[in-house]
Length: 485
Image (cartoon, rainbow, N blue to C red; front, side):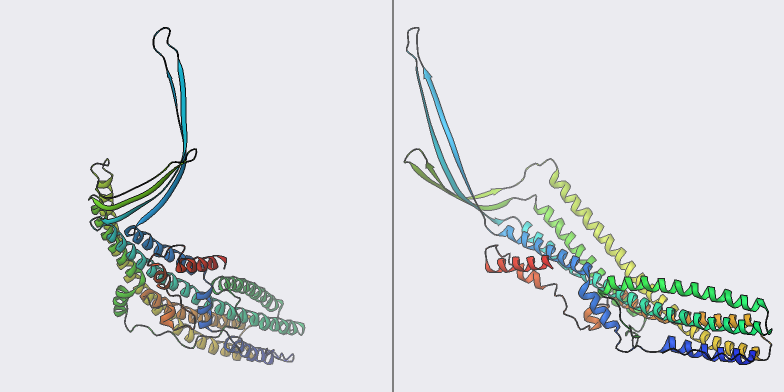
């Protein structure tokens, strides 16, 4: 619904007063009217979670990390392989002695078909493979925490997209009504000029202000289009009527407490800790690689002569113990590299700890500033309205010009725009605090979505099912289905 201000043509006082009443009514409706059947912030967050390609990418990376554990576990199981070949062999003979000796030549050959099966089973390698398994598991846990961190980024981006669409929608409504009101002001100024109450300067001032208002409206509409595109990219659908979130999220009481919570439970901290554990285990793996290994070997073969009737079976079974003596310094280099990687991860842990603490402090500082700005802009709106009413009353008495009224109106408009922006910034800052403490997750927000279980795939593959087993076939079907989505 739109209220058009009534413009009287008989007196300047009646014109300005009607304009003032109409502008205030329009501004209130444009900014404060609630939307029916509106989409909520929770809807946007759920849509972002369900439609995020970034989350799908990192879920696939987690599945790949799960398979790294499986591949390492397979090293403790028997390795069985087969081979077959067809071999053609031949012999040529020639002979003779003395001057008058008779020469004789002969040749023979055979074609053999060989087939065999070999098996090798690692019995003991001084813990190298079990340590490698533990290191791979730590990397899985790190990747899971990285997935949680990505989830937080996706949800925070959804909050920003939601609030920006709402912000720019209200800006467009404000600017559009501003154009409408100034258009009425221009008509009133023209009418007053026609009867000789004002000069051409007053009309030109109103025309200039209308052009500026139209330019601001075009800018606001462009900003809204970009905000909508961002919303579609994040949430997966165009925004409907977006409702104002009912309240700010519940935050940790103090900044210092929030920092302690973040250092204990932020996914970036947990991921860095698992990376350090994996690096330490890899040092032990590199040391164990210098030690011998014990394995059980067996082979079974058959040879069939294709141009004859003979065949032979053969087989062997044995225990093998062996280890490296000299490999050109490669093993020592690998060990030193593992130590360096461990030190690098320890450094990364310290960097992550400092960054997490800093991010919490920054988030709280931004939230505090946003709240102060929202309070100040609220006061500015109230003061701007009082000033606008006062200028209009003074204009009735001839103490104010058309330009004074236009300036007062512009200040009131700017105050309302700043208030809209500050209110959106408070919500974004509050959710940024949650992200900085590691509490901006689907579970913490209790969103009504089907959550992804990061352990489900690992539990299916941790026993290293073979391709021909029922579980292996089931996994292949699941992966093909995921790939076709």
